[in-house]
Image 1 (cartoon, helix red, strand yellow):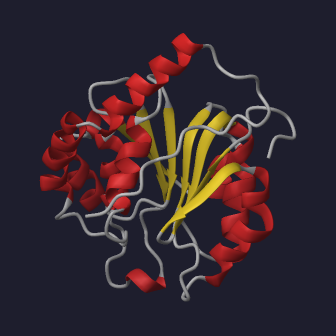
Image 2 (cartoon, one colour; image 1 turned 90 degrees about the vertical axis):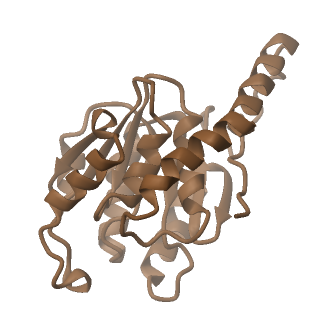
Image 3 (cartoon, rainbow, N blue to C red; image 1 turned 60 degrees about the vertical axis):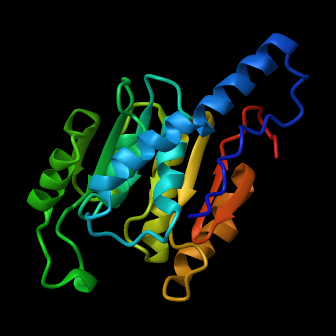
Length: 231
């Protein structure tokens, strides 16, 4: 499995960091990509692999690395959890910390999921079986309605809910103001032929407000600028 490493935060025109800070960042990066992390991922993957979901090969590890790279405590908001495959990838990167994944979903599916509607119990069981219940907080409801009352800072926003243009845009616009400077934002199914509206939101609205943008297969990502107006 070939994994594209998570890029470090982009800092725009900020002055160079002191040498001691650069060395500390290098040590953290080695910790995130070293053999112990690989072993940790393999242990997590033995349970996650059986959870139904729609991620492309390697994107599971990307989500794990992204969550693991965050400071503790940190808040991860996942929009669209289905039966918990991506949720468990993110939560596995929180293990042993005070980081938490807020899984926002109606858990009632849509016409594409028929007859597997109302899968909250299956989601909960998958999270429990993976030993991740302490790191996952289900938020049952429509995502853009949830955003109206959201108050907590977000360190990682993963958008993979409804793929209609208006809904994807509402998810981004509703939660993006709560993403902390330097926070990571990721969209799933960008560039997939079946979901042109996701690509449209990414191209027209999201990527122009992020720095260090990139893509791993159908997963597009970037960071909220640290500096006002930074690109």
